[in-house]
Length: 401
Image (cartoon, rainbow, N blue to C red; front, side, top):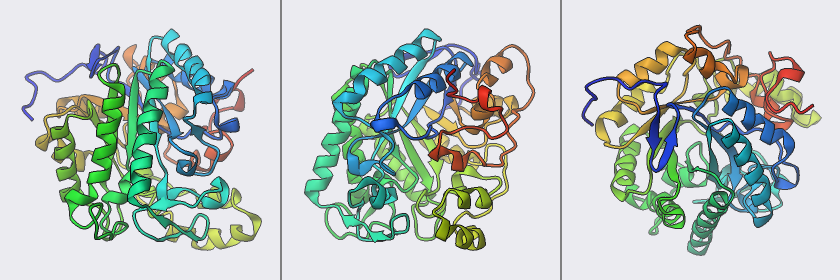
């Protein structure tokens, strides 16, 4: 990728595929909490309206499951026909604030809790799912084709609802990500073995989504650069996957991430591991045990600004495709550094949970850092409505009077 002669202005208008954006700030997908009857409610509308009012160009609704078995715990949004009116109401609220809206669509695969969804979790091969203490079911070719169709149908529904972009989840150990993993995908058929065969399913889904929505909206993929686990996907292979996706022409941008919800979630959070808080949301018989051994699952990684940047730079050098820098963006200096190094967009999560108005504050010449302290105590709140615990209840995102 040839460097720009001048760094991009993070507050200047730009485009993402066919979509006009007022600046280069994106609210990343951070699961907002239970969706009653798997549908959009008032709280979710208000959550994203406030994010839009705070100045971002695009806010991303997470996590929209393409099928019931693809839900993480049975309480996520489900992209069935009944979801379209609520999604349309959310899109209208975001548009009224001058921003655009994306839907993160995905299939949880081995990350799904079968005890909660009522469906066996699906994976490339049979592995023990610690969330439900059951083994995943190895996907058949028929499953793969069925899920591909479900992704395309889900994408069409969010476009029908007036969304401007679709983000396909190819990270964090979810179904498409698990097929890329040499550790989780030990198949010997056309869907496993070599990297090209392991990448076949994700590439097929991205192509199907693009075909389903055409050039009416932007299509992006959230791609793992590294799983953060021994024998998992690593940078050399993910770079090649990125090259193939760019060659396929199926996406308008890649959002670069890492880690695994199944095996190493703190790899993509960094900062404090909220072991005590996570233990409190577990069934009582498990709480003490998790307090004692939770550190073996929630590893400790010191927080650093732009912690994925060293990996992301290699994608920037290798790909002639717009890239979204994610991970540890909480100062305006970091944003300018990303622009200086050729990244087209920055995505922010926890910083905006703490301060949804942060982009407007930066735009208006207030260059102070985000107030986020990276305590990660927002992590366990996803089961009752994602929020920053340092914000008063009446001021939290999604608070509805």
